[in-house]
Image (cartoon, rainbow, N blue to C red; front, side):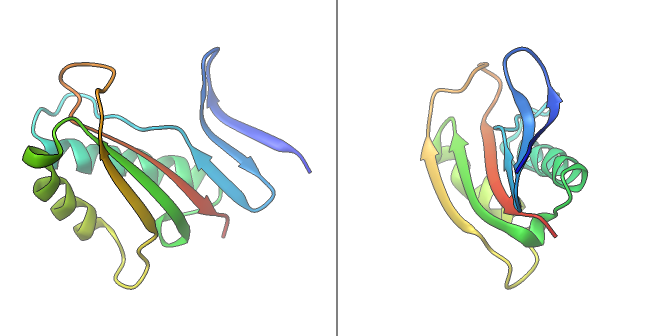
Length: 116
C-alpha cells in the first residue's frame, strides 16, 4: 500500500493518506482573532484538505482540538464545531488546553477520517 502526502513542505504534510485512512496535520486559522471565527476558518481548511484526500467531514473518525484557553474558548469553539457537523456524524473527540505556536492562535484542530 502506498502513502500519499498532500500539501507537503520540508517540515510536514497537510494530509497523508494510507489505505482507506486520511490523517490531517493540525490546522490553524489565518487572520481571525475571535475563537468562533478561528474555528470556522480551521473547519473550512479541514473541508478542503479532506476533499483533496478523497474524504469529507461525514467520514471523520477522530478529532483532537487544542484550545489556548479552554475555560474562555470552549463554548464558542463548540458552537462553531456543532454547527459544522452533520447531525448523527460526530467523530470521537478530545479537547485539551495547550500552548499554541503563535500568540494569536486560539484553536488548532487535527482529524483522522476514512476515505469515501
